[in-house]
Image 1 (cartoon, rainbow, N blue to C red):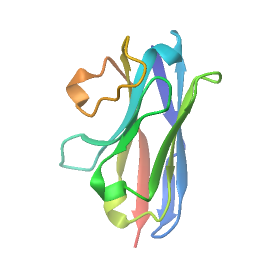
Image 2 (image 1 turned 180 degrees about the vertical axis):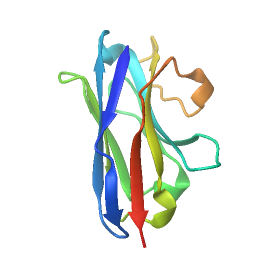
Image 3 (image 1 turned 90 degrees about the vertical axis):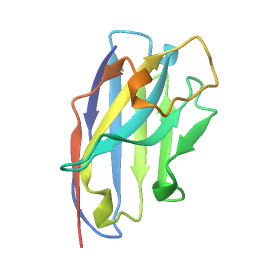
Image 4 (image 1 turned 30 degrees about the horizontal axis):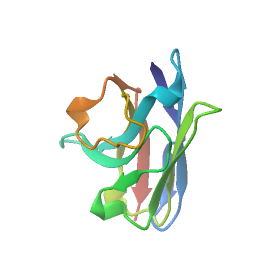
Amino acid sequence: VQLQACGGGLVQAGGYLRLSCVTSGRTASNYAMGWFRQAPGNERMFVAAISRTGEETVYVNSVKGRFTISRDNAKNTVDLQMNSLKPEDTAVYYCAGKRTGYSNVYYTDRTTYDSWGQGTLVTVSS
């Protein structure tokens, strides 16, 4: 599956952004999806993940209550709504997909994902 992420930009602390990941080439509903981020000099880290059906989601502690992951399998999109942004949220954000036969399983380990988008930069100014 090919993934295309968009929606990044520059925002002040306390603001919001909505990232979108569009999938093509394969049926999106066959893939569990995730969002990861990589700040300069750091490893790519898990942010949020969602199961194939969208019923199961999980977040890293630092974004719980601020970020929401969702998906629309009819439109082949996975979104990440980011509210109350902080300067420490500044990073390149990547969407990722893992083909799986399990409907309600999510994945937090980046090494398990099959496909990656190109990344979109989010910059939060203080």
